[in-house]
Length: 194
Image (tube, rainbow, N blue to C red):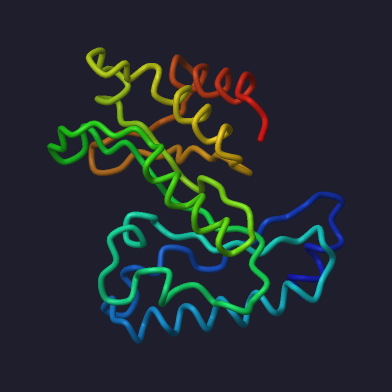
């Protein structure tokens, strides 16, 4: 029913079903294998509809680049299923919980690009964010980070780039009206198209 209602819309729809499996059921190899099978079944349901409905796999990315307990793509990817795209949640964690290391996104993007190319699908950034501390960091040009990230993604053929507008545990990632949102909008408007 959900598939059919989505297919009836006049827009393309991307479906991600239960993303971030890394902590499911005690984070075991078996739990992650069950996630893969759930993705395979869901992909089959959505494959039977219009080409306007795309099925995506979404994970944290970090756990796939540093796999443990079956969080690598060798366990998670449902080979043989019709997967339209893969997406990661990748952030600049500078300023959260005392983290002082700076992160640009190309290394994580390159890992995702390689996976998408190997599987014959698109790739995207499902979530990204910049803490207040990172945005204010003049040493690393924090105010220019989003622009650099969007440009790097577009140059690598990114299908979509989403910002996670959220505040939690005293660490803020907001995209409220102001300099950060203005910079993100400007970066999206001026980025090279894939």
